[in-house]
Amino acid sequence: MGWHPVMHDSAAGKLVTAPVAIISPDPADWDSFVALHNDGHLLQSSGWGALKARFGWKRHILAAIEGTAIRAGALVLERRRFGLCVLYVPRGPLFSGDAVIDRLLLDALDRLARRQRAVFARLEPNVSADDERGAALDAVLLQRGMRPATTIQPRSTIHLELMPEPERLLAAMSKGHRADIKRAAREGVEVRAGGAPADLDAFYAIMQATGARAEFAIHARAYYAGVLDVLRDAVRLWLADHRGVTVAAAITAAWGQTAVYLYSGSTVEGLRCGAQHAIQWQAIQWARTRGATCYDFWGIPDGLGQAAVCADPAARARLEAEAQNDPLYGVYRFKKGFGGSVVRYLPAYDRVFLPPLYALWRRRTEG
Image (cartoon, rainbow, N blue to C red; front, side, top):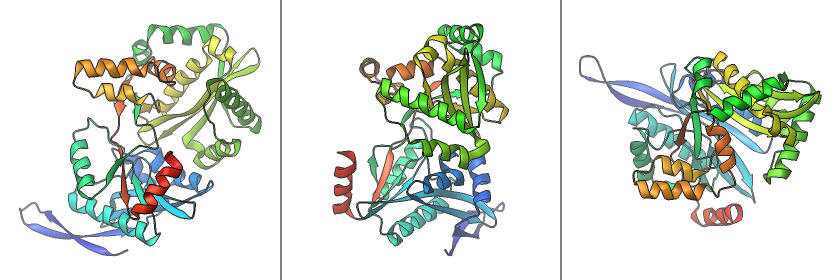
């Protein structure tokens, strides 16, 4: 895709020129880069792109390389609907911190969007709003004419640091969560890793029942099968059995430095006996053995994320009170009971290429 000279300071204080190329990297090389990047995430992995390619998306990977090293890049998903095309960068791009290299990457994204005749490209940086880089990145993207937009992935979540030993992690949980984990063990709940088709059937039946009870949408069975088939060793299907019956199930991932709580459900009996608490405790310990340093609980009411970064005590109290009416507040209480801190990401950013069609797209997809 072409070479570009980039100026750097040498050890002697003189400017030197190093060529930087924008390429489509080998997926294995890309995954190695993402796994080690501070902002790397499962959703920027080549495997996530391959998964989405099974369900209507096209995968592109752009990387800025200097010499043989990838310095920055983005997994880009392309979707065509209503005869239009949009590009989406989930939990990315992954920037280098070098303004020139990062500008070259953004220029390459623009070229890809124009080549594919995209209405717009949506970027969703995996950078928290209170990160010291956040304000600078926000300014750079706005200066390029991007518009803040609603995120597709949850904007607010809970991160649990996994560096402490399991005993300390357990001690940092709420008293109620520790009691639920102990109750599950006392009542004979057995947590196991699944893999057989019957295990996926049990998982999906529980997801259907949970979705109907809690009134939330779920994916088709084929999608969950795709998650397990494509992501393979990076994900684990968990099932909790009580008295010979599967009463709770979950899929979690451990990729690079971050583990992710992706999907879960419980029967009424599973809720009573603490089965999902037992699953999460097992998943947390598994993530540690995989080298993850952070467990992302993946989504809480955004009002609580806003409150976490709000400096005004009165406004913070109002946001926290309003969040208690959010349908996800019970989910928040479950996730927060494991410890961890509330994190709120930067917004998404839309780079608009066809303004009239952009307005049409948003009316059709966002109401």
